[in-house]
Length: 171
Image 1 (cartoon, helix red, strand yellow):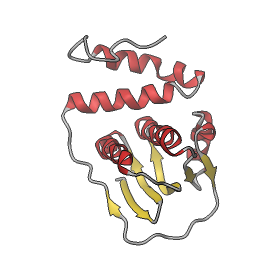
Image 2 (cartoon, one colour; image 1 turned 60 degrees about the horizontal axis):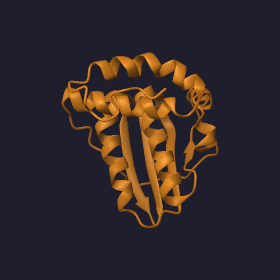
Image 3 (cartoon, rainbow, N blue to C red; image 1 turned 180 degrees about the vertical axis):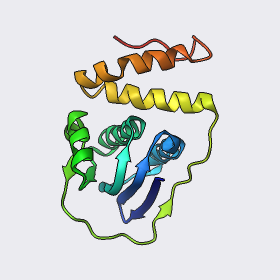
């Protein structure tokens, strides 16, 4: 079972993902990204994956969204700290080195972190969150575009209203 913990230390955001972080964590990650607009000053952002066993593509897509938002609003790359060779290999192949500082350096343990709740969401909202995460991954590089194109098209085909913004996949 996965967990997502968070704290703010001065002007640093720290997000810790542990265990298996999967699609069911999407609502929590989506809500968290929404809170980033509340910050006027952010000096650093650390994503701690030192206790993560695995991250599915949806979780990776939300991490990419955090990086893109941080770069756009605060003009710096967040840092991901990860010791897992498998997760590091996946992040490299997905193009994360372009949008994150990737580190294997040890970090100090951080106490008193709050857990982000993984409240249930309806199927349509979850589908939209998965779609958004995968569109973000597709935008990182051509390899991701090829990898997730069919999934994104299938998810778009399941949307209840063809008039929804973003219904058509950009070519």
